[in-house]
Length: 210
Image (cartoon, rainbow, N blue to C red; front, side, top):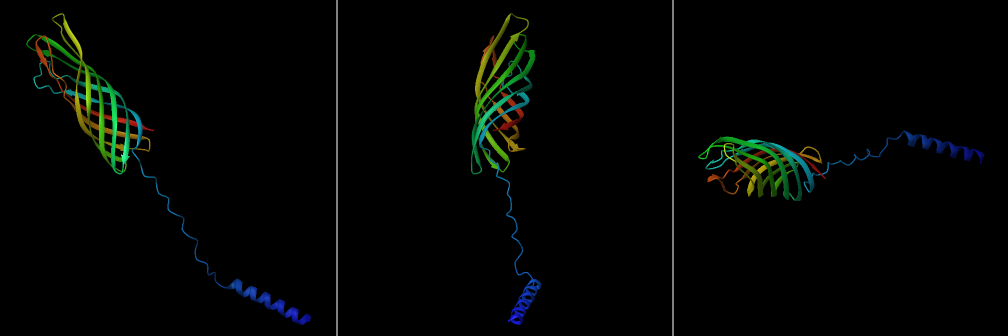
């Protein structure tokens, strides 16, 4: 009996040793699942800063074409549907658009010192790049004067605005844009001289998207 148990034990040990020497038939561990970066979305509120240059393009130029720099703030909202983006944007810019010259009355000064726009936007998104068109309302605060006469006038001139531009998302929250806006303003008369200056605005800006 003892011999039988000893033979069985030796056979078990030999079988275990032989099994340990056999090659592992298990396959390699599965590769980790790929991690994809989340798709960027333009949807959300944003605020920002903008600045650039304004150029008057009046047809009669009774008071010349004032030009100069501008800087201000922007706020808006975008909503993305597939690759299409719609939204609304408003901004206020402090401006220093000036022009001095002479017309039929005499020497004059023309100045635009603030610009406001409220616009709809529609665009096409190519991942982090947005190409857009825009249009809506524009208003400017304008001052006209004749230094040689006790005559000056400050008024708010309203009109429309249209334009186009491009915007790029540097990060998920920071975007940079460049745009051109054309604002045809309503006509007015001062001391019998027609004033129908329109504005071309070239602007760049940075926005923070929430």
